[in-house]
Length: 158
Length: 155
Image 1: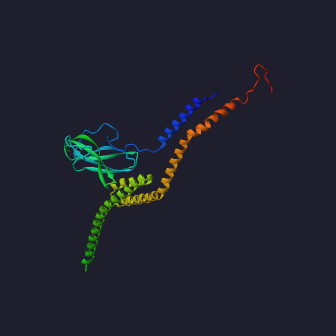
Image 2: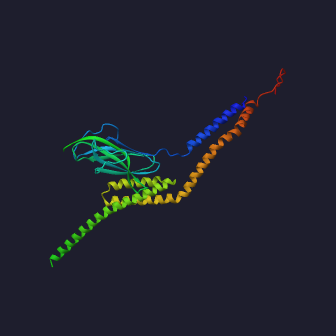
Image 3: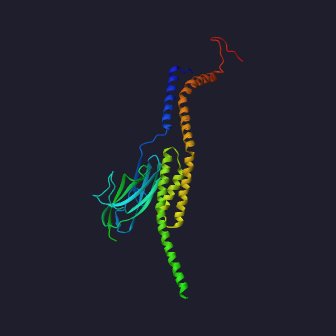
């Protein structure tokens, strides 16, 4: 069996490329940081959301949170009531009084689901909005992340 | 004279009520104080994390404290929150003390990993021809050599 120089060069090139690839993969890299919020039904699944509610009586929903900031995140979910013409944007939160809120500390690359019971005291077709806020260690205050979810629901009098 | 015990009892009842209301307002004050402590601990946690000091146990303890504090209605619950916050503070102190060592281990691990991976092509360049040559020799060492056109020599 004769291994000529060309075969040896090919093997050597493969080993070199594999080593460089392994080196690049094994070094820690931070991808684009992001936070996510999702709205789920009372069984913490997508779909089958409530369409109607009785004023003053709680409806149960589930909030999904995901942290990929590259560090633990102190998050607050704030529930507010809006409507089709009054919703938050990616830069400004809804300018109404919160009706419910909860705080969660999420480790990096972790997610969680939280059940929430919300009572709505206004009637008509409303948008139940959940805004995601984050505690900023730089500003030492809560800042709006620009992430929000909403559910249109018709509230009838009790 | 008969009215004195009744007055004493009334005074005790009033004092108890006053103490209870003070305790309530004190608990409310302490809740905000606890949140302030939570923010401080979280800031410390993030600061350590950014420097390479991971504290998963402290994160879990702080997360549990927050969850409890949001649902707390009794003083026993608040006492448990306090214990968890103290545990978090102690764990963060330990991580902070170990931080230089952790950073050194992290840097060394990376350097060793990079060294091993970068030395692979050199090792292949030096060792591969030798391995092939050795394997070539091993597969042929039982071969018997005969002169072309001559007779095979029996051992």
